[in-house]
Length: 163
Picture 1 (cartoon, rainbow, N blue to C red):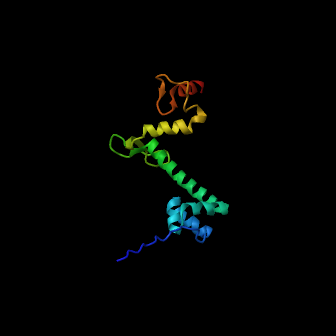
Picture 2 (tube, helix red, strand yellow; picture 1 turned 135 degrees about the vertical axis):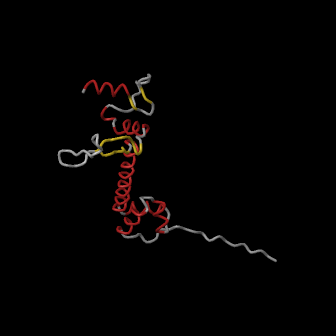
Picture 3 (tube, one colour; picture 1 turned 90 degrees about the horizontal axis):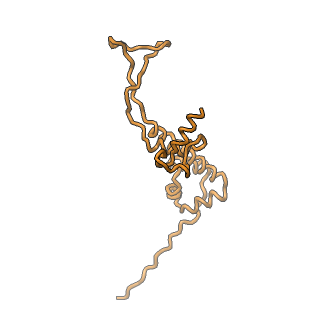
């Protein structure tokens, strides 16, 4: 019996019809800015998504805007991780009565942490976002006053003494 060779059908992920800007943006938002998932949704390769972005700058703007929104959300979460979540209780007098402020609102006092601050995240933020204010990597700062991960203790002390 003669065997017949089956030719593999070449599967191409060629350029399908480009979606409307509104659909492109809605799907991209739902997929969290993930271009691989976006390409899968539209049945095209990632490279086609880039072709669409080159052909129509508004598609590139949509991707940039959605990714910026995602970055903002990540930054908000990172901020919580870095700073922690304090735990508050109502302040009471010796009889257990809740104290109020001058506007009649209950006073709260911090009693600890629901989620403690993350020192590594704090160092990262200080080294990256605080560079303009004298924090960050200092190649001349190689003694024991330097904290690993780029925060310069010497720069911080100097800044404190100046202000």
